[in-house]
Length: 88
Image (tube, rainbow, N blue to C red; front, side):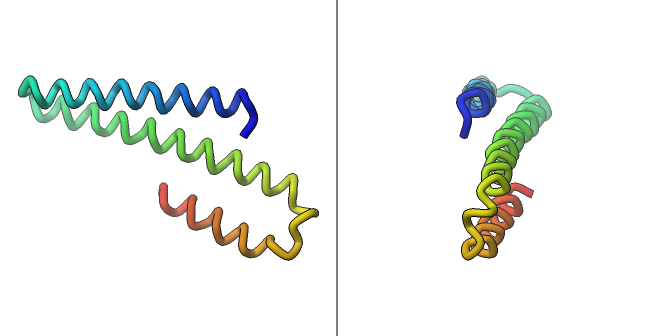
């Protein structure tokens, strides 16, 4: 993963980490269930976006390496498809 892409994904994950800490505080403080659910949905979307960014980078890398991995193409495609579906 390129440095800029890595930085972007790490920033997303750090924001999600902060959101999760906030959700824990909300639950400990007995905050309204609707507010907690709203924040859970937001952090879930943030994690999904980070995962999709990682998969997109993997796909891009595989496409640039395609000529070098003729024998592994089907195996790599199956792995990437499995990863993608795990987030869908």
